[in-house]
Amino acid sequence: MDGEVRHLVGLLLGTEDDWPRAFEHLVAGLGPVPDGTGRRHTFATERLTIEPFSLRSKPRTDLVIDRLAYWYYHPREWLKKVALMDDVYLLNSPFTFQAMEKHAAYCAMMRLGLKVPETVLVPYKNPVDHDKYAFTSQRYNQPFDLDAIAAGIGYPLYMKPFDGGGWRGVSRIGNPDELHRAYNSSGEMLMHLQASVDYDVFARALSIGAETMVMRFDPAAPMHSRYRVEHDFLDPATGIEAITISRVVNAFFRWEFNSCEMLVREGEVYPIDYANACPDISVTSLHYYFPWAIKTLVKWTVFCLVTGRRPRLDTDMRSYFEISDRSDLDYGQKLGAYRRLADEHFTVGEYREFCAAHLGDLDQRVLDWAAGPEFDRLIVDTVTATYPEHEHERFIAHVRGLTGLWVTDESTRLSSPA
Image 1: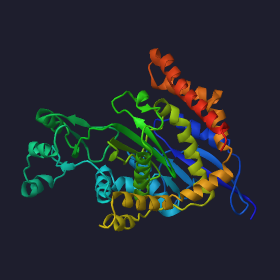
Image 2: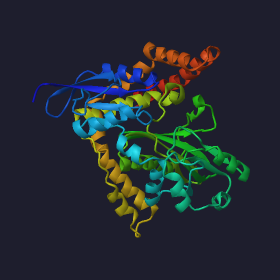
Image 3: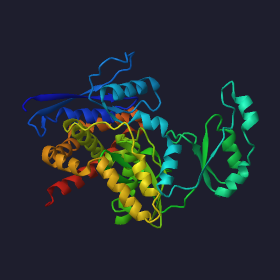
Image 4: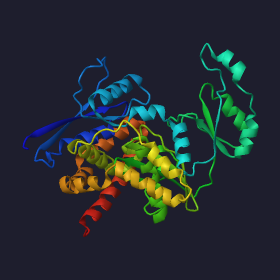
């Protein structure tokens, strides 16, 4: 069947400009991509605006990359509408991110047997703003001993909001005084107390569709230095486990653009934060890994649209629970079974074959772009918009240096025999 299919990719954005510019540039240079029937698919992008919408209106977009709806509810409800009524493909699902925040994600992954540190949910410090709260709390809320709970978990521990939010409200608690100070200041945030882990390595995995990049991460460093350029910092088995955990989390919740934080101690992997509706992909923080992230986002977008991948609004948690509840399987066997389910969900084999057949030149094109003037302008513009003037020279050199290292490494990789 001959013909051309045109696809519009919508970008639902907040304050970001660097990765959208990069994504738009690469998509604009794609050219037609064929499918198995002989049709050619072309692609355009549009930054979506926020305005009143009829629930029966027809969207022009085939796929939307959402970076806004985790906090801005009007566009979130539009995303729900176009997913339910129009089969628009979403990165990410607003349904599970709204219903399955970090608390639910902890519960689910604990059931799957992942090594989530001990976690306790404590009631609000301040009364909930609801006219029924006073009566309900007087009748049903039980007094509790916050010190005893913390002692049972053990110091140091972390207090953090049950629904996450970019390090919002996170406190490291070292003693009872710090515990009460943090709890008293939590106000109407619902908080977890979570055991700390003395770790050897802090890893952060960024998963985009069928691909995952595991990076060494330093949460105590300033943002521009948190992602450390280190290869092989995990042994092969631990690296596979980190990739598996990140991909399983995404498949389980139907997320496709998410990051997962894990602590590694003596070869044991402890996932601590893996419900990030808007993972960081800024060039000033990802730097070395930025070209990979944008390239992978383009590849997954094109794959989904050309192959007609259908959005999966429903989850298949029971398939995972049937594995987790089996007493005859150990942790490694269960993890392997989860990985097979996750790879099947993301059609990893089909994705790799598609990219090899239809996007084989993209690696070189991304390399040429990252080594060229368009990318350098992106660095300069982003740094000057992000940092005060007296720091421009320093951070331009910093980002240029790390992305330049990626160019060198990628040039070596592409020139090496397969």
